[in-house]
Amino acid sequence: MKKRFLLFTGILLTCTMMLNAQGGGGGFQRRTVEERVKTVHQKIDSAFKLDAAKLTQVDSVFANYYRSTDKLREELMAGGGDRSAMREKMQPLTDARDKELRVVLGDDNFKKWKDEIEPSMRRPGGGQGGGNRQN
Image (cartoon, rainbow, N blue to C red; front, side, top):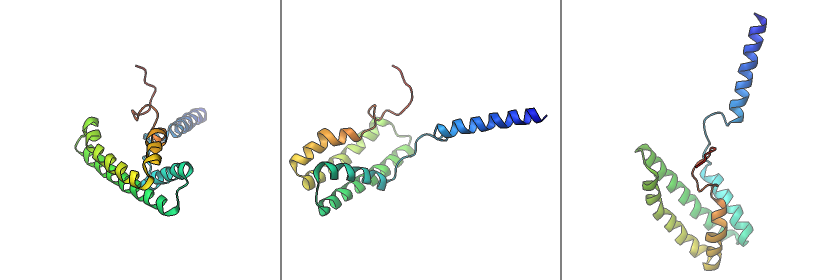
């Protein structure tokens, strides 16, 4: 009886450790607006060395953008939203963000942002989710 108990406990412990190693089995956790703004802040600060006032403006632009996209994403997901509809409705938010960024950064820095920095911040695979997919 002791052997069965120890075996069961060992198996349970092993399964628990494996699930925790997989992120608890619940998928990924979306970062908060503040965490995402901090990431952008660091990238832009290291790339452009802007003054504090401009960095504050950039932080504000991205905080508004991330809050708006999160709100829209929640609304679309609650309605069983599909990806193409989500992309279509998020495009005006991205365009407004880019318009504000162009004003703050200037044309040259904005071009560098769009061509180099923004693509490096996207998830690998174009945001198609994780997994070990093979086509």
